[in-house]
Length: 218
Image (cartoon, rainbow, N blue to C red; front, side, top):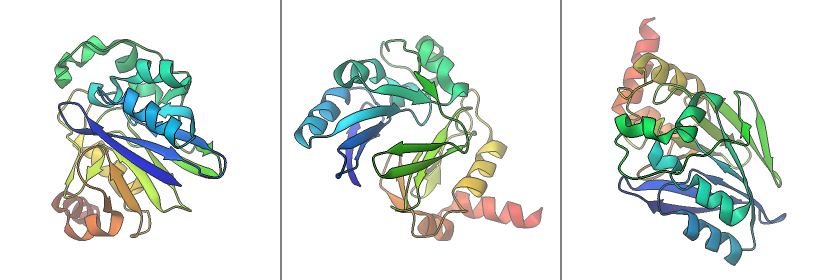
């Protein structure tokens, strides 16, 4: 697995180009504003064919370049059904701090909890993780010990739950059931900020520690 990270947009949102070096197949995780050309050029340079563009969730800073990236690569656009309305009707995201015009687009396919997404030799397990948004998903590749977690959890923090469609209770459950159940050496590649590991967040993240304490009290 080869991973390239691109950071763009006013919120310094990450996009990831993830390639299987043997087959040359690749996917892109998230498409922040201003990222499409960089990603397409990197794919050409490294002889990767992008099969999928996947939105971890529908907030505009993660999907603003969806349409342009599809035009440049011909890739299929995938997301969870619960967030597709934000892709089709981006003006709804004025409440999320939308700062520019975003081209509406529909997903080619929906990803559901428990799906396995195959890209070359890589097999990503999809987990539906509402809380930051209704349709947030994470993608875990157990053989590579890596999880693309969007805005669910960050190094030292967690995603906001006070935006429309958010819920602290759902966020906590998603982290407890779909992040803290992964091996401690699993790398977490987040939507913003530095990469981290499950073990580091379990030990040092005050929000994660609160979630663990809450589960022990139940």
